[in-house]
Image 1: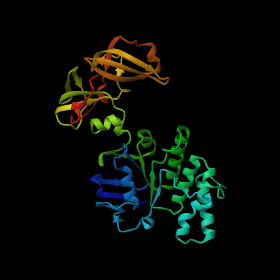
Image 2 (image 1 turned 180 degrees about the horizontal axis):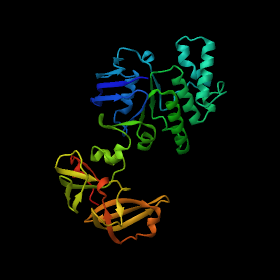
Image 3 (image 1 turned 120 degrees about the vertical axis):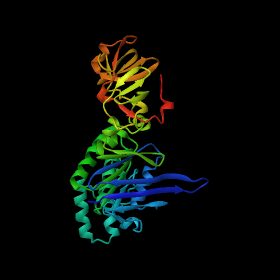
Image 4 (image 1 turned 60 degrees about the vertical axis):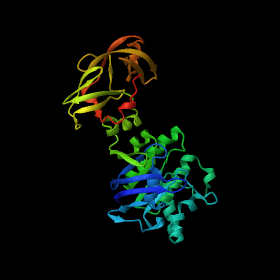
Amino acid sequence: MTRVYLHGLSKVFHGQEEVHAVKNLDLEIASGKITALLGPSGCGKTTTLKMIAGLLRPTEGDVSFDGQSVLGIPAEKRGAAMVFQNYLLFPYMSVGENVGFGLRMRHVDKKTIEEKVSEMLELVRLPGYENRRPKQLSGGQQQRVALARALIIEPKVLLLDEPLSNLDAHLRDEMREFILGIQRQLGITTIFVTHDQQEAVVLADVIALMFDGELHQFDLPNAFYERPSSVRVARFFGGVNFLEGVKQGEQVETPLGILHVNHQEIADGPVVVTVRPEHLRLGEQGENAIQARVRSHVYVGTHTRFRAEADERQFEVVAEAASVERFRDGETLPLKFPREKIWLVPPEESASLPTG
């Protein structure tokens, strides 16, 4: 198993104007774990993956495996195998020839290649598919062939570029479980790129969230929901409830009154309060309860989404499905901000907070 280090990694593309795709990225990727590089399109995540693979050379910085720089090692000898978003299977080769391609390039003997191909196809649940052509396979099957082709060379690091983006919803769920099972079975250090928060949370042991070529938060999946580092991070993970305030100890003075919070390592002074929609409590009295008017609701079967307004500020509330029978549009009710679910972030983006 291999630990990957990115030291001050930067990539600048030169054209009509310079594009700083990745900016001074420092990252330590744990051995034997799955790490997601997550972010919107153009944030630098695929560029980072290609620099790890050796397909792009950094403008500055270093990539090392187990403490040894690999920048001077060509991609084919680096020990990193990459599965591309569009699979890139050779259409004129059979499945068996595609899977065994890396071993043929290493001049492994024919008998060993056949044995290894058979093992790999068993591993990816495609036994007996050696003689089929890629065009005869479904998208999910092509993805598994591409995965087998990467794994057959026994790489130190497995790199996956948007591995599920070309699959429909049902196949995505199936492939998530499949990739997770393969990785746990082999224990291989895996790094994958995605723009999908759910995909990152389901697959990854840890997530590196990037915006504009820079790392904004590197953390466990649940931390992005419970402890986002900024308003921007909270919004990316579905946060919609924000309220400006001033912190003093375990109290925050807001336009809606004083909110009591648990101790947090953020300095007293201006802050932004964020609470996820599923943590607000509509119709509950007690500490941190304010009066709010129900503006609208949407029943979605498993839950009901309410929009409530207090002092011209709107909040989204996710409640149990049966709540659709309890609360009516136009009704004024208490809206509780549970102390243990309030999170405070710096006010760098507070000027753009929605107010309704």
